[in-house]
Amino acid sequence: MDPALAKEEKLEELAEFFKALSHPVRLKIVSILIEGRQCVKNLGEQLGMSQPSVSQHLSILRSRGIVGCKREGSIICYYIKDERVLKLYDMLIKEEV
Image 1: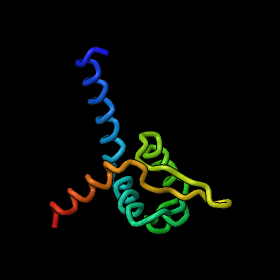
Image 2: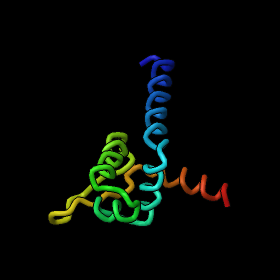
Image 3: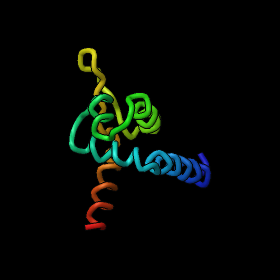
Image 4: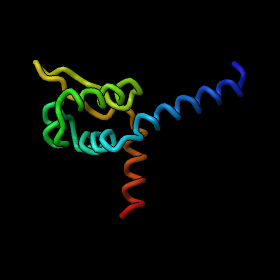
């Protein structure tokens, strides 16, 4: 593969990654999931949002590989899948303090 094309594809991928994180609700979801796995119901309660709305945001984060999910009985729990998010969040939070 042409190195210029590979770099372009990587930049496109990064743009999509940052787009998925560019909404305040999704950043709040990430901050909650950093603390541990959560189901949609718990996320909705913590965010003060409906489950369908939370699910839409989770869908965007899942489509970019930022979060993953695992079924635990009848409940689906979400967790941080992409380690880069942990590093970015940590770096940004430390910058603010």
